[in-house]
Image (cartoon, rainbow over all chains, first blue to last red; front, top):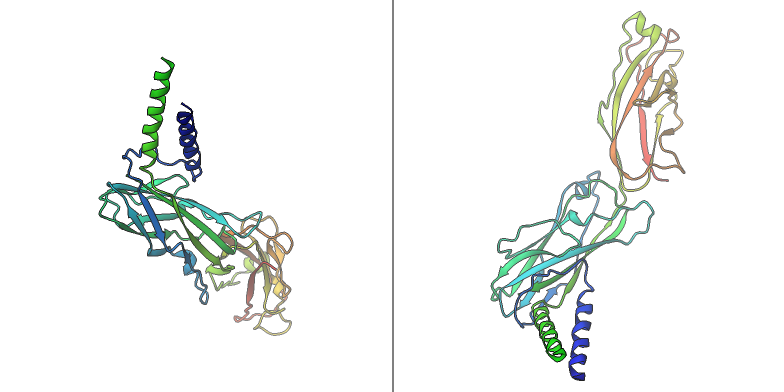
Length: 166
Length: 168
């Protein structure tokens, strides 16, 4: 019987660890014991901004990281790929406004019917019920124009959180 | 009986645990935005050259008011202020006496009072130490031009007005 209680504690600690993600993870993971895994490469990329002459085109046009990130999936069943995001402004300023998270969109190369939607701090599906033999997805990240000029000069950062359900 | 409940409880938790295995390990990637360069952009987007004709006695008696004679469009991601000044103390053209810049008075559109133009830069919007918060938008400039009868007739009076956006 003591072993049962120990198992109980281990199971509950597992839930607690898994709760430490942005927003709430999807609750509709209904697969069997498959232990899918994923990797993302590279771990970082950059939207670069330059001012050339008097042109503000870097602020008035959207920017895209085309197929910059590759997600490698290992799953025993069809899977759904979820993404959430978090924006931080590294430049401290009382009047600084972070880039709104919905200024970004993330699109998977095999969305399988998933719509391209603005990024959120809640997990959203960007690839639905993808066959398990589609073991890689490339991600396209788009940044809408920063033409409100409400973000202070300096470096801002977006963290993407991804995982899959099968 | 209690053992049965415990058994079912553990069975349920085991099922849930199996479901959690259907979620992968989370992975993260970082996207760096920028660094964003400093933007302090000011453009005249309407009426870059304003022409005024004093071709009636009434105009010379009362002066001429031009509402939104110039439209400035600003884009700044730093707190800013805008100054105005004439590039010279007097108008070019005409003859003696020279027509001073102060013949032109200005205000932000909708303002209550006009200020005489001079070659010294003075605040038009915000000021050093009380800058305006970053953003983008437009300002309309109203002019009241009133030379009176002091200056000789001429058709080539001209003066350049400078607008400067700054965060310093």
